[in-house]
Amino acid sequence: MPANASESRIAELEAEIRELRRLLAAAENRTADDAIASTQRSIHHARELTAERERTAAADLRSTAEAERADRAEAKASDVEAAYQALLVDGEFNRQVLENTTDCIILLDLNGRLEFMSVGGMRVMEIDDFNQFRHCPWTDLWQNEQNQKAKDALAAALAGEVGQFEGPANTAKGNPRWWEVIVTAIPSPDGKPHRLLSISRDITSRHEAEVQRRVLFDEMHHRIKNTLANTIAITQQSLRNAPDLKTASTAIQERLIAMGKAHDLLISNQWIGADLFSVVEAAVSAYVGKDVRMNITGKRLQISSRAALTISMLLNELSTNATKFGAWSNGAGHVDISWAVKGDQFSFEWAEHDGPAVQKPARHNFGSRLIEEILPSALHGKATLFYDPKGFVFKFAAPAVALSAD
Image 1: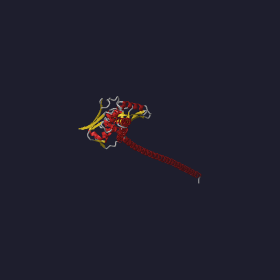
Image 2: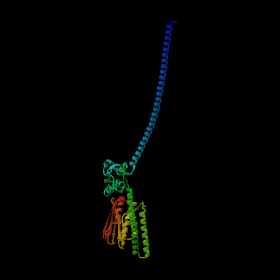
Image 3: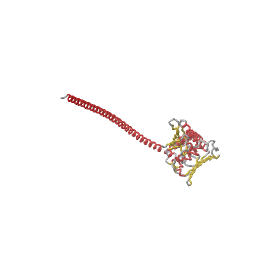
């Protein structure tokens, strides 16, 4: 082979080698690039996987938080519903209390004007429409000295104390009642009075019972004094008019026994009914016996236990006065007792004669009030007292129907 051909061949081979080397380098570069690209894709995928996992974890956290919020919301809704139901129950309970209580519950502003009255209070106060009284001064419901008591109670409540008093006041329809009243302040969050609360309780029955108790106590006290005076008077009269000690002793014993029976009758009040003549005779015989010192005139008349008791008490008081001061206090006086029924009216008269000169008492004591006011009113009647110097006269008139009413 010529030298030129060999050199040419060598040049070709070197060129091929360079090409092969280039191709090999290119292949290596592509492999490296592919590896790098593959690695980059793996890294990117890993990043995406990590991000997805983070997103999933965050979603799980959000889901858990949402579930917890939902649970809390549901629990809160249940609590709210329970509280609402409790409020409904409490509201219904309070409504029933305010509607059915017999106390008059009133809310006042700080000037003492009416803002609210319970349904039960409207009922006991006999108020049909509270709007007619809204914003009216509460103290105007009380008259005379009770008005000042109401003002003092308001002042006490505003000062942080409890204002209270008892007193009479008419209902809206004019019916008299007796009330026990308490006034207190309703504080605001800062502790200062915000409104005033007034509670009035109808104690009319209790007050009437207390008045009756006082009357009965006065009557008992009066009756004990009269019993002692009557015992002395009966003893003196029996001794004065008896021919001997044995007769006087018998008369005293009979009269004291009769007086004791009359008092038993007054205390027990167990009569079903009685004849008026028998009632009069039994009541006065304890003082003078069945003798000429009294004259009873009147028809037999059946009366109720209430009328019998009332008339017996009247005669007991009149007999006591006659024995102590009147016709039966000397040896000559006597008493005429009479009654009649004309139409629908009953009239009764007690007239004393031949006793000491009569003088009108200087003071109006319990005994006078008993026969002039208290006992006649029990039979819806009217009594008149005449202090004639020649003899005391008592007249009593009442509806005839009152004699048979229990």
